[in-house]
Image (cartoon, rainbow, N blue to C red):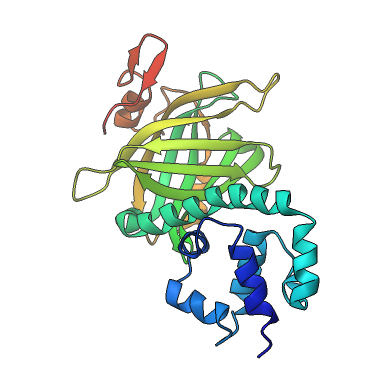
Length: 270
C-alpha cells in the first residue's frame, strides 16, 4: 500500500488540535484511525468521502503524491481552518442525534399534528406526522394539506431530525417541496407509560405576505406504529377551532390551556 495517503492524512491532522479531536469529529474509533495513519489498511469509500468533506479536500487530491499534496495544502491554509469550524457543528449534531436514539425509541410511530395555522390565523391545521429510526438517528416527517376539508389548495412536506436535549424533544424540519422554510418544534416528553399527547411550541414563517416569523402551540396525538396513512392524510386540512373534528382536549391545549406570561408563550403539559 502506498504511503502517500497515510502521510497526507497525518499532514491534515497537523492543522487540528489533536488526532483524538479529529477522530471525535469524524466519529471514527481512534485505534482504527491509527491504522489508516500507519498505512495498515485503506478507509472505506464512505469514510473517505466523510474525511474529504471534513478536511476540505477532494478525494483525488488526498491520493496525490505527498510532496504534491503538501504544496497544494500550503496554498490554502485558511480554507483548512474554515472547514474545521464548519464541521464542528456538523459533528456535534451527528453525536447528539445518535445519543438521542435510544431515548426516542418509545416515540416512534405516527401522530396527528395540530397547531394554530401561521398562514391562516384563526384556523387550526391538522397534519400527519411520523417519527422513525434511521442509521443516522431519529427522523421526523410531517405532511400538511392546506385548505378546507375536501378542498385542498396545496401540500407541504416537512422532513428533518428529531433529538433530545435537557429532557425536551427537539425537531428541526425543512419544507422539502419549496425549501424556503424551516420549522423548529420543541415538545415536552411523555411522563406516562402510554403516550397520548405531546405538547409544545412550533416556530416558523407564515406562507403569506410579508412572510412574518411566528410561533404558536402544537400538539402531537399518538396513533401507533402500524396504521393506514391514507385515511389520516385525507383528514389533513384547516379546521375552525370549534370543529367537531378536533378533540376537545386538543382544543384546550391549543387555546385556553396556554400560559401567557407577558409577551411569552409557554405550552402546557399534556
